[in-house]
Length: 140
Length: 140
Length: 140
Length: 140
Image (cartoon, rainbow over all chains, first blue to last red):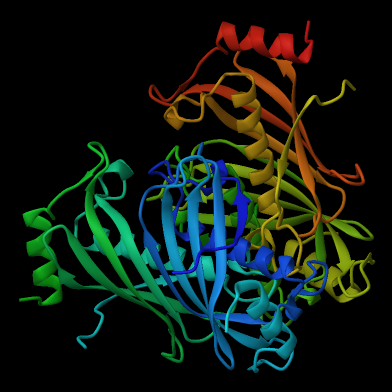
């Protein structure tokens, strides 16, 4: 499996914890989402000050494997890597890593579909995005 | 596929929405979690006023399929059904349904592992729980 | 002090709790917000399926007094009442009540300013809204 | 007013935004809370890997003034400063600042009460904590 090139550090907040004292399961999706948005910003596909209606992706499927609890005092980085580019959809592989120990705490496989929020319908992935991602990820 | 017998109504809150104006993807896990906890309470496996350390389950894997956006003004119910009981783990099937139209907005398959939060290790599913669940779900 | 006429029931979710095992302080604002939106819907000032850009209010100040912890298994209702109508701003009194015991768990005083999200500026409170609120709350 | 000496950077997450596209009001409390916890860790009053039951504070009152919207792409720091030490309670002044422009986006005044979560009752502020805070803040 090719390795993930993009990582984004995320601080675990007290407000992310649940009664078990560790990161609540729903917050894993928040962490993955944040790294995904930063990945798209990193690749120049979203500037961050546009309307979010221009962030043309919608989630179709999410699969998360929880490997170890994420604790408050752990330094965390979250990875993102497009592993498959279809016509209208792509697969993104993600992981949550303890920056200090390099332990993998969770992995995810996420399918997003290109979506025009203004027209409210799926669209083919922009050619420009396709090229940018292929280049960055070394996809064929 | 046997049908889900347990549903719990959940109100979409303004605070659950994201800039796209619909339910944020991470909140789907919050909805599934809430229905799961209510399912366990319904079956008498958790009273709700015990320590949450006694809610002996930990998530191992989550797979969510997003079928349609969940809007603020939709009446929602969330289903839960144990479909497989292993020695230490079980599979829970869940769904998010528009109560009015009966549209299925999302489905999930969730693997939880019986876990002793005090001892911090996995444990076999309590015999009593096993019987309660088998009886409720009509499992063999 | 005139009494609050509008209450909205809110279910405490497992996902609202923090490591102390009770409702996290930030979630009090989520509860107040949800009751406020439902208050505006109740008075016909927002339909719920419009764009949220048409919900013409912005928060200026919030003051919350925490009186007792909110537990997972407590049935809760959240009240809202406009107590003052200015030219561009209004004061809303809110409370979080244990429905069973009628214990007041928290109170809030919230100042919201009428705001045009499209034009991004404060505006006078619509005359129609003013009349609707005065009538409902028995304000002079 | 003496200036705030302790600031903690917080990244605005996509998951913190609401349908208006900016930081949801409840998240301001999450930001203040996170800076408060980091302040206590900074002063050696909490190690971060203890039980959170040992973080002996409970909120009594919160007053937030919202000065400007917090946007996704803003670099943010959140300040905390104990401005008053009573017998059992203290007042903490907080602010949310745009790190780049130094614009103050929100301020808060927060009253916390020393609390023994194990015994479930208020307690006098530990002498050691009192000295640590007085020294750090230059309080008389």
